[in-house]
Length: 251
Image 1 (cartoon, one colour):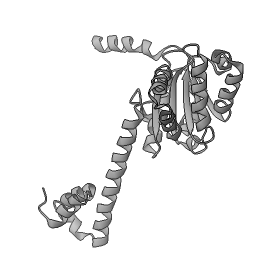
Image 2 (cartoon, helix red, strand yellow):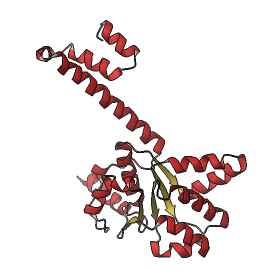
Image 3 (cartoon, one colour):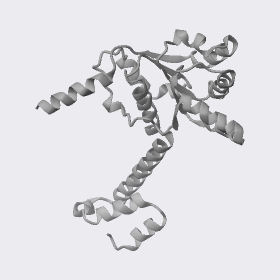
Image 4 (cartoon, one colour):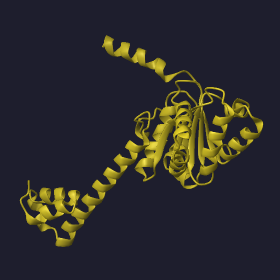
């Protein structure tokens, strides 16, 4: 540990990145050839990077993503119909700037949730907030919140998130209360924030699945227009895991 008044002052000011960089510079004689401005610039850059990393880690914790998905681990080789150029553009985040939505559909196991979490992860790393919600659980939370008076506050929290994932859309028939919950959430986000939906149902069937034609029109009008659609197909990726395990065991 560097025993230096400046190091102690930086620590007291909670400039921990600069303090660590200063301690490291003390053990790097070649840095003596740098000018004062150059060394100061290195300290400031280190502080900036460490703050950005802490902020990103905080956003990822609050996002509560179901899977630790990252763009680098996406498998584009599996034959599931994933449009690689489109998805890579989506990872850039311009769709969030335009308050657009993403609808990911396909059979179970093709990686819908993973892709949604990878998009949200990329958003967090770009400075945006995100939140993962499994739709059946969300409806339960809203019902409890309605009973204890937290309903308006919970809706307001959903409205503020830059990227909201609603996973497992259409797993069960909705009653009128849940349809209105969906409409409340999507109405607040329409043209203000971005939403990612994952579903086993094709988008063309969502209107009937919602049950009420009038509310279905209102919900889908706020969701489907100006949305990017990723329609996946193929066998479940989970079926590959036992085969890989056997191959490893045989080696």
